[in-house]
Length: 313
Image (cartoon, rainbow, N blue to C red; front, side):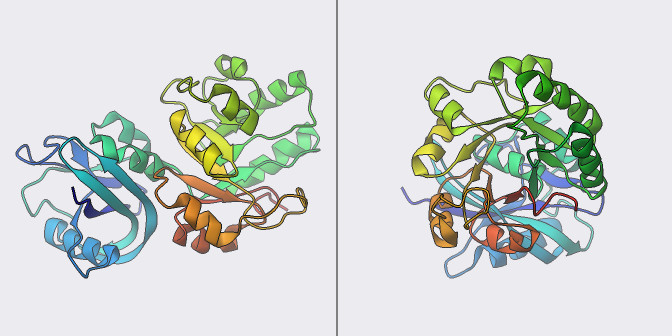
């Protein structure tokens, strides 16, 4: 069965809301919501196909777009490759040119809409930012909180509270303060035993490689609706992360780093190979910063994760 190549767009308007459309009842997965787009024709690039489809379906002209995620999915009666682009600029007023119902939705409300199964990673990618801040170690709690306040003011929306030098009690105390500070402004990913998770109902959890191996094959260890992430360094660990149904991963190290000089860097080419066909959001980590975002997007990543390069100076 030939895989159907479809270009789809996560279309954002100025207030950050995302456009979704309801599929006609007489079509495959009819009645469910989708990100607008359509089939890529022979000899056509995904970017060109998306621009054509959005002009035909919505009456808008794409002015700026960039790769977001590729998802391969096998339905019982159809195999699809969803080639998803983020549309950041367009002209015209979107309307249902083919009679379809449209809705502009706050990204955080997307999980409350019913999408085809293949769209689940796209819903996640549409809600995640391009930058994932990991906090530096060996900071006094006051330094950490002051730095995070600056990061929040600078627009950081996803934060991993990493402080391996703290003992358990001090980490949990700091986690409470950080979670309260970030409430409504940024998502916080905590690290540590999953038994702590009930203490921090608003936080997600970032699994270490050791936790990844410990829970592999046992199903998702955190309830749906809370972000679950994992650190990965190779294809085997990425496979484990998929079986645990994580929402996103980090892949590292891409370049050589001062914090882990002994680690052999993957490089951009290997990163692209690892992400090809993975089908879930991934942040690239290790020697990267905001200036590497465009390259990270080109190789299939959600964005970049960093400690020093994203920490306010």
